[in-house]
Amino acid sequence: MRPLHITFAHNRYLYRGGEDESREQEIAILRAQGHTVSEYVVDNRDVPKGSYVSAGLRSVWNGAEHERMRKYLRSERPDILKVDNYFPLLSPAIFDAARAEGVATVLSVRNYRLVCPAATLYREGQVCTDCVGHRFATSAIRHQCYRDSSLQSAAVVFSNAWGHLRGTWRKSIDQYIAVSRFVKEQLIQGGFPADRIAVKPNCIADTGVGDGSGNYALLVGRLTAEKGIRTLLEAWRQIGSALPLKIIGDGPLEEEIHAALPQLPGVEYLGRRPIAEVCEFLGHATALIFPSEWMEPFGRTIIEAYSKGTPVIAADTAPMGDMVEHGITGLLYRAGSPDALAAAVRSLQTDAQGLTSMRLRARERYLRDYSAERNYAAMMEIFSRVLAGDSSVAQFPRRTVVDGETEETRRQAAGIPLRPAVGENGLREPL
Image (cartoon, rainbow, N blue to C red; front, top):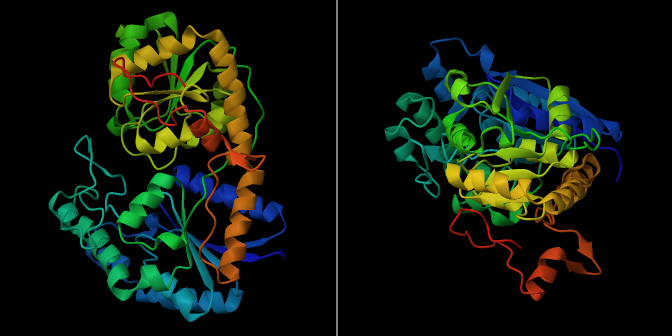
């Protein structure tokens, strides 16, 4: 394919997160392959404090951005407008602007904002799908799901609803790219066109295989309740120093962790660390612990662990059940259960042969599904089909095809369950 010109449009969040990392990785990959990437970026920090009413109205339809985007596209003439986040400043208006200028549009969906105003499918400590499938999600306003504010929640609700009523979601977006199969399923339930939703996971740069010699487990992430931090600490009350635990990250529960450390001799809190240091810690770790209890759309730290050949012990939420192959690249345990997490850690510790195999398979999974090369090929397949007017993009394969047959079909033929049942101890039954 000829070199393309892709404009990446993005509304920056107040706090940098994994979505920003993934977006920048895609830009770097495309530029390294000779494509032209221009950026159209606005920032939430530019919203004046106290102007929530006017900002909320603009989030539904920002006429000024509509005109600015049309002018920008006429000037740049990109082949594709690739949008990573449009809320709140860009608004759905930018998609209609691209349509008016005849520019193909692609929207990456890395959270649940289109079907859940909170973007998390999580409320009051529980998974919540009340708004999925409701074009006017009044429940979110009633429960103040976005920033604990009825007014700001209403802005998201009206923005989503207006996109449906105006036909923006069906007429002005050529392709959606869901970060996981679970995200795609939620979009379909929310009324978005299934034949226009491709699945392409995030990727990371390869920093080389680790040796797993550190004899410790590692958690990396935002320290919040929905991330399963309290479950993690309770599990390590049982595990103790049998396998030390290192915690990297910051967040609201940081003080709670500090308070618990005197009673948890096996736990060390390292605070926030640069990504290069995180990769080093991952490479030496026995396993990454991923205890998140909400329906996390994608586990970026999981693929970071896989790239180092480090297996993952993860809570068995639906999205993570697709990323972590139980007994192959790691272990799954009953979400929210400290006992089940402790049992999973002990199981991994006492199976040296299994741990060695998991390290090899984790690295293989990274190379197969999450490497820069694989991601680039998937992006270009999507872009080429969109430019050809074919929005029914082939889905990201779950397994590598060998001799015309996938590993999944081979397992089915052999009578091996793909999603093993949960046993009494909370662990998946062995494969």
